[in-house]
Image (cartoon, rainbow, N blue to C red):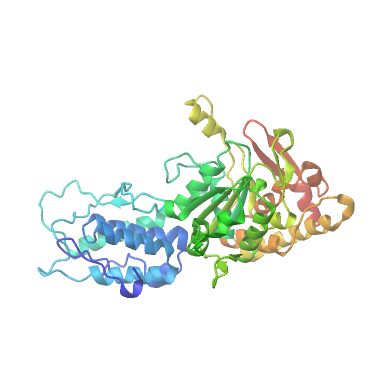
Length: 468
């Protein structure tokens, strides 16, 4: 379905108006254009489709097609879709009313959330709200104003609740979210790629599946591959069969059409595979030499890549006993400000054991700027990265890390687009530094062994950077 030829069939007994009418409560086009695409506008549009489907105004097939368009289309076209639905369902029916008896009359009480159980429904991050009424015993059809108010309330509820709070909560899949999930998701959404490093069983694969669901991707849009021994470029970029036909891969399909790719065991990948991936991660394209006539795959703007590993690419997991390959510095640079250590969540341990005898408290996984001033925060981040860059280039310190333009770019995106504080960005960048390396720039890091997470002390470092 394309927006230029969208055809929406009304299967209800009357039309459900969704125009502004006299209520003035439904967001205008300009207001919708100002919304965040992933966190506000798409959930808003999905909520509208769900409301129309529940009221019988569109059938299941139409609703599914509309949800697919909402997932893949840019902001301007989603706003246009809402306009088309507005036009299609704001026309009065033949009896002069705006809805048939099959549409419930809106209640004056707050609506009750009710999650959708339909398999083709996209998760919107919040359950749909279905209007109910405890005093609707007359059986009279609602007026146009009544139904407009009902739709407006549903839309406003979706907009108000669509932005996730930075707290641990059950995910859309029903599983308990890791306490670091808000920060991981922010990194993935903002930089479109992330590297998670943690021990076996820390939840790396589960987190990838939860993020895919939260981003609105279905099973067809999620691809996982373990870069174990024997995995070659052909597994990613396809191969030729004996008939001379090119055999495509799901990896290429998601690269070019959008979705989430999980590269598991990233620190165990073949060197040739890593070289191919480097181009995709840095330049948004990957060579497909056997696909004649179309030898380059261009990465779709909605293609997200999550790499997971047991080590930081140094060939060893230290006392953990992991033995992996050493990753090239160019590969690690692709994740310079898009990486993090994923510790085992103690609450999840208690959950799988069926125990609730201890209270476990984790800090907020990211520090949001409450009085956010992007320019000021970006200047602070630049000053701190400049200081680290000088230290890295000082051979006497033997830091042996990279910090180039990509680090500044990825860090700036997190500050500007995800409202993450400069110090939180710094924690992300320093994830793979050793304690001894941190001491050379006067940063202290403590490790909580029971809760498996690190805390940083930047006080002395900040004093030096800003000459306090």
